[in-house]
Image (tube, rainbow, N blue to C red; front, side, top):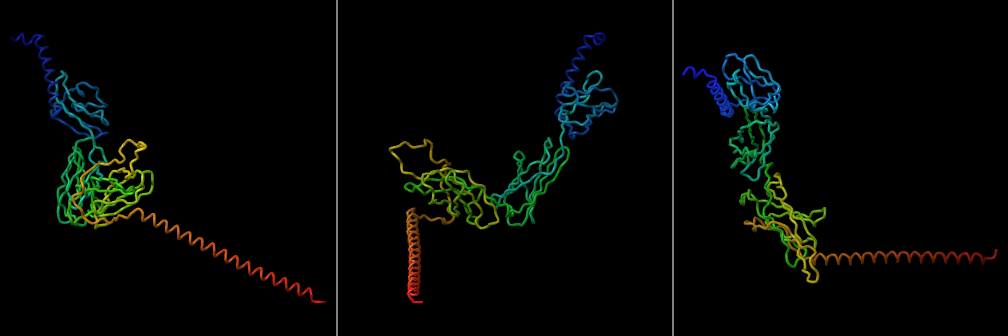
Length: 395
């Protein structure tokens, strides 16, 4: 038996098994041991906790060429000015190739200040979002709180989308402060962001905007919409709406303001496609912000259908999402309907009056010229008579 243990075949088998066990140990240790380092700095990797000095060999990702490095007398690996290429799974081995230690190296930067912005879509909700000024390349954790003058509330985090939400806050307090902290393996950084809610209140755009032609009226359009879902339907907080519209291709907008949930446009340009948009704002507080504009819709007013000629266009004349009518009407519309004929009659009357004025001025000028000419002729005749009399007097 002792002879078998010392035979070359048996020793070869033992050596192969040790190599396989070493490789298996690398794979298991790579997940459990992680070391973090600063990018573009010198990084030190120790070969385990043993203090015994012995020559060792370092490997990167099972044999990859190591970046610029040094190995000290105690087996420590020093990576110089480590960059992204230095990341990976490191293992140190003794002179026989047996695994002594393995570690996974990740490089990055400590956190920096965050760029923070907050939106207030209604009187009870705040959403604050952030972006990084420093790209750390490392996993991070965040904590956030929202402090008023007399209370402290958590800001519920959504790290994947990089925002947090506060609900049921004290809206009428003068100032609030968001405290947001980012932490990773190399450090942490806190960002403070002040929010004056009354100035940041900005509703979401109105929803379910519908623009329809009115049959029999070539210059009218019916516009209707719903309150944004994020705005509570409470009589204490009403919205005012700003509708703008123009013929497609024009640079000038016409505007209508109303607190109702529908309006009738009475001065559309017959036969032309029109662009229509809407936005909203808190009705009673002019310090708040207008919402973003709703998506642009196209619609053509009603036209008399032609049976002798095919239509010029085969696509639908108006493109917009159809939705349900508003559930709540909050106030009477400030817009009233006037017949189109009234404008035409007024234009005719104005032209007649202008013609009368012009004729009166022309006749007056003719009369003045005629009178002056009569006077001039009379004076000339008198002068001639005087000259004749003077010539007839004997000298």
